[in-house]
Amino acid sequence: MKILKFGFIIFIIFLFSFADLYAKDYKEYIKVGILSNQKEFTVASDKKYYFVSNDKKYYLSAGKINVKIKDKEVIILNKSYKLPIKFVSSKCFLVNNKIYRGNIIVNSSSKGNNIINELKMEDYLKGILPKEASASWNSETLKAQAVISRTYALKNIGRHSKEGFDICSQVHCQVYGGASCETKNCNQAVYDTKQEVVLYKDEPAQTFFHSSCAGHTEDPKFVWQWKTETPEYLKGIKDNYCKDNPHQTWTTTLPETTIREKLIKAGHKIGKIKKISASGTTTAKAAKEIVIKHSKGTLTLNSYKFRCAVSADKIKSTLITSIKQKNKNFIFKGKGWGHKVGLCQWGAKAMGDKGFTYKQILEFYYPKTKVGKIKYATK
Ligand SMILES: [Zn+2]
Ligand SMILES: [Zn+2]
Image (cartoon, rainbow, N blue to C red; front, side, top):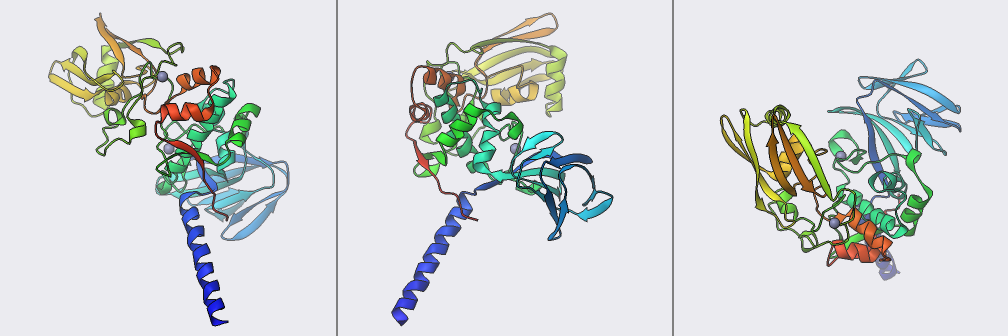
């Protein structure tokens, strides 16, 4: 009997240690920051719902209510309640007339108050795909995007822990549009790749992606100036698939005063700009550095830092083919769109159109990786 009991205890310890491992690595629910520093917002559900404050439940009938946020409290129907509060419904919520699956949390953090959407990872991805890809793209490309967006989210969980949520809904993490933006084919791509991620040595990979590389993807050491060795799946590959995309070439004209103001705002002490030139070549044949000759001297900047400081929207990439000066303006010409690290979305689209599967697309852009399934922790 004693041996049997001992065996049973070992079995239970074994089960719990595995449960902890999954709970730590792969959360089924994700907290997405959707709004910050709001003074008030509206919340609605077409079913009876409730909110929890201080461990107490308060029931509300179906319909819309106004929520005012004041310091560490909220005012609902003329009564105040302590933050955090959590709205729970069996149906979707409308927050400021935008639809969200899951629960809505209001918290206060050292960086102000936040409105957070807490929902299942698989449901979160349905609100990502139409924003990060194009819903009209072929199903294999959408499946590839679903796998990399899932992997990216898992890898970045807790990035906003100081604000009390996991991930934000902006470009900084991934653009999330809630259930309002969902489409049938994007939801299908999420469903068809359920729990699938890109694995490198049995761990989720860093699945960076960008719009178009214009011929070669980039080693992140040139972009974010990583101090650690770049993993082999991110060193950059030759890509002939994206050459017919609409962002293959671009031209931007910027006044000298705008460039100077933006660089000063980014902390660089410069005078009137006389000349701007590109210097050095990266893996993706982009400029390593930008050299700015000005009335007080010369400023040499990492090209990605220059792009972000001046305008990441207007200077679409660091693959700058020419910089000319005309009157009081600088004219930049270049190729591709984005940081060029990891998967090239327009290349992936072209591969999908040619009949490649999503696994072939992912193996092409992240060499030596494989697609595998993860397990979510049971609550
Ligand atoms: Zn973020
Ligand atoms: Zn490409």
